[in-house]
Length: 504
Image (cartoon, rainbow, N blue to C red; front, side, top):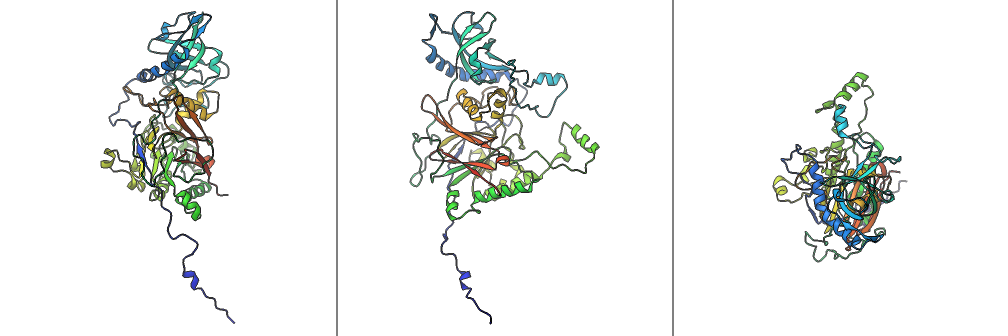
């Protein structure tokens, strides 16, 4: 006997699930275009003007800090006095002077030596560290008048790199060196209030005033969030990693989550991709003979069609096209992406994204400074997001500062750059840069509320404070291809949480 079952219930909608899907939170977003270059830019000019521009802009701030700290300083009955130029320092006189730091390091690359030895390469030679343990590195202070060598035990406790502006107090010794007693930096620049450039949301929004506290506790709030990911490194050569990229996509779209988690993900109002979205590592063809390999290695100049692999950019375009109908995306270039190598990197051209470029701003909107749903931006990049001033980079600036110092503390380097008021101090010495003549955009005119750096070895975050009540949330964003992690920033408290994607 065959038993018949009533299957009419299969046609009914599940009663325990919500009938309405959650709605993506809107994004309040205003890019500042602080690092956009003119279309008629020229590379014929010299780079020396950048250092003089930087010194002229930051020197008044550091001299103000130094004057407050040292105006009543006396040592051995002698009062410290200010001198205008490095060459005005006199032997045996207690004084202080401001200038630009220059690090003389034997492991640092020298472009003049490369040219003289006919080693002109398409990319700079990268070494792990410029810092030497043998004590051969020298610290100089220079301005438009000259240069003096700095010595003293204090220098080993304070990280310094080429291009930062400082004030030093001390005296010149019999060897013509400046014995440093104390060092001052400009410290954090003035910080704008929240919603300084755009209008805060009215009823229904949860914008808080500028006195909102930042904490280091994990994020628990239910407010809007910003997702930041870096180092996606699309290559198409690793099937297991492709699975994790798909899981990331499903997480951001809410497809791999239950109804409760979907409501939380819907509060992610914007995704920021901070550099190295394309992998330069291509699968090697084992059938290539040695002669073909040598032929490719010898080609240095011009376009090499045989070396181009379109698959990574196609996969990245498909990834973005899946996201963009649901969430706005801001894309910063990185060291491996198809953009100019020198700082500031200009936006990746939308021609690289034949599917996703439909969501980018058209020419008319771009001329009116209206960002598209898909916004390709510069590296570094500055914007007002949910009312907060945000500064972000793809990581090259911190990676280059890392080579100058003994420490591995990436957050400490980020903090130092904020207090130096310069987000790329080593440009143009060891970090390739455009030769600016009228302004140095790397000088921080205003202090950000959030400063993130992509493509870092591991996740880290902390809050730093300035003398005038400034608070800055520092975030080191790990490379997703290595860590399988990205970060979420709560737009009300600026608390940060880490999310790990794994296929295991």
